[in-house]
Length: 194
Length: 224
Length: 198
Ligand SMILES: Nc1ncnc2c1ncn2[C@@H]1O[C@H](COP(=O)(O)OP(=O)(O)OP(=O)(O)O)[C@@H](O)[C@H]1O
Ligand SMILES: [Mg+2]
Image (tube, rainbow over all chains, first blue to last red; front, top):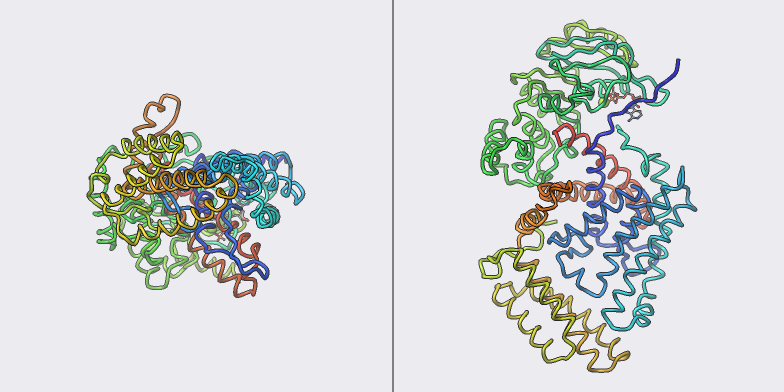
């Protein structure tokens, strides 16, 4: 007997729910006051891993949509950014470009992950690294325009490179584990889980 | 009236339902069976959340595959975990959310929401943040959000699993008082006293279908 | 998270001004900030924005919080710019920063999220023809606020569980279970929304 694979009612609301819940996930990463990773005394805010994870886990379309939703709701005044920030001010500040860059981070990371049938760690590392680089590509010129000096902006941003490099690796590892726990998440329809 | 005709379903290679033929007209019907026996899958079919791979399902004369929205307007569904069912920030807003397509004004929707909340023991909670309610209150809220639409059928998939004994009893007693047809999936066998019919599933098949006492006796023997 | 957002309730003119007009005003101010290149008019703008805070009767505590956050930023930017561009350049830069950020923040403090939502819904109405559904904006706000509440609860549980297993410093021990439960919650929410006729 030939088995037709189950025609699961792929619910139109499944995408909406994932987009909304992932936007909330990125917000929650910011609510948690920060992690003391390794022996460092400085808390590390995880929120900017969010867009990388959104792309790497949900795929380009839904990942980007969730980041856009998060930023839009932040802009209208919900305190969804780390430290309870929200409103228009974070976008108007010098690091506003890094926020807008999150959209491209999710998009690029998602596009790379989708190319792989079963995304493994190398693909995911490539995806999260590329995602971070496009964020810099938006954020640094924005900062440069703000301060009137692109070179200085680039130098200034070097401070964040070590921390961000760590987060890129962590995001890739986390995404790999999640893909193993719930296969088909990036591409397939939502799977019901008990 | 809910009819299953030769219904089968599988996920990948795994058959989760086969040859289910049922005509459910009783007011209180319960589904029991081991974990993974297919109860949730069957219950979801009544609401068109899962479409059968084989056979057909008719709900109040409608086909969930083709008339999903019409079916869902007349069938309410209460899930196990109210946290995933409550979609809006406050209790009142969540109940009012159900009425968003009703054409009523915002104020009228809020008024109805408050009315229903009061009727089921959540009076005064309309402005309360939904996530700060207790587990039992959340499940009541999920029920209110369904009942405000006055559905003809109410499907509940283990609505009492996360509740304590007192809230379990209260919830089921409440179900007993409703006018609508109720389909209840549950592992709490002692709650089924007042039911008209109990269907026992095992590995995707109906293995017993009777009044509560004989059906539950069979199920207990099956479980060993 | 406070579901009212960062709004600071009040009855001043700034509070009562329609959100759309206020937003246009903010845009005009932002343009001025970037066009002006000398300290004096920029300083005047800063004073005007500060007067806005007085007019809106923003409590001293909120103003203090903002001032502290701005001060840290301004000192950092000022020193850097002084070194790179000289004193005037640094002053201009910092005044711009203060005017733009304080004004944007004032908008947020005096405008209810629900008013912004209605303004956005009204603004999007012409796009209905191309398939945009403006009434979804309010739904998205409500859904997201509720999802943040649910996920914060889950995040707290996950963090405790990680601690119980002696892994409180591991990002993976926190993020992986949180994500798995996040996605599960999303699936259930998707079903619930479908069941509720969305
Ligand atoms: N989305 C899915 N993808 C793959 N398999 C699934 C899916 N949903 C359910 N299953 C499988 O289908 C079978 C029946 O599941 P169902 O949820 O209907 O059982 P159940 O009787 O409700 O069990 P429980 O008492 O544990 O809730 C199980 O073996 C389950 O693993
Ligand atoms: Mg089940």
